Length: 152
Image (cartoon, rainbow, N blue to C red; front, side, top):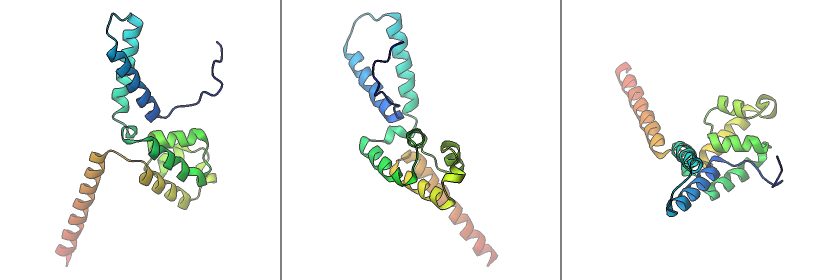
């Protein structure tokens, strides 16, 4: 095996999704007989795009990613940790502990809460999922108010 590009780096899910969409659009325009290998590659590309379109990276843009990386700078995360945060969009302290090595020693509880706030502010989630969560929160608030009225 030979190293062809020493500057190669890890790609985030958004970059993979963008690359595969571009490749699919290029391959879609070229008609003709495809070999078995090309057909298998097309299947893998299709399955990967289908999966990635169900993840938060579907709603990301290069500008969002740049803002997140800028806002993550004070937390002194490694490149791999930033990549995991970007790809997985953690929403709980437990998820942060799983992604950030030695997070208990490196980050205080306040820093973890601040990190989660940065992530939820910078990285868009699924708008439908966010709407469902808001509705559930409203329903719980309504139930609490009804219980208080019944008690009073």
